[in-house]
Amino acid sequence: MSDNNKRERGADPLLPETAENKSMQSAESGEGGDDRTPSFMTNEAESDIAASLALFGMDADIRTFSPLALAFLGDAVYSLIIRTSVLARGNRQAEKLHNETTRLVRAQKQAAIGKAIYDLLTTEEKKVYRRGRNSHPMHHAKGASLEEYLQATALETLCGYLYLQGRTDRLMELLRTGLQLTRRRNGDPLL
Image: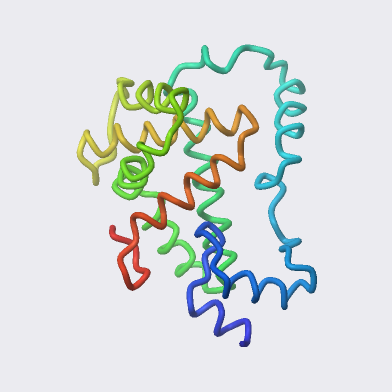
């Protein structure tokens, strides 16, 4: 199968691997692994994050960070993961990349993902999620209700928290599951 055909089929690195996806990756790389995985998605990320935090003098307990500070970082982390996923589906015009990314990073989609994964969260993760959900932002997105915005903020808070903890594998697992649970049967996003 050509690279273009695989891209058209919408192979998504955030979604769980099927036997077909694994065999395609094995054929492409020759070893069954994907050596194009960004460093923020690997186990090495934990030490890299710790080193980065130390570089900026951040030795504070991240549990003491405000939920909105965690959401500030989590928004960037979530956006980077989604943009990487969209780009991994194939090189396209910038406008098409932007439109697909926008559909996946808007508050309504984040809220749907957050609701879909909530029952899968650990007790600690639920506490962080609820802290984000109960935060009091000064505004909310004009295209989203306050409830959707708070749910999106909760997901971003969780993303920021897991990222700062160096738990990127867990973050990726939750986002893969959330994206899978919020898709229609034909693969199109629900939102």
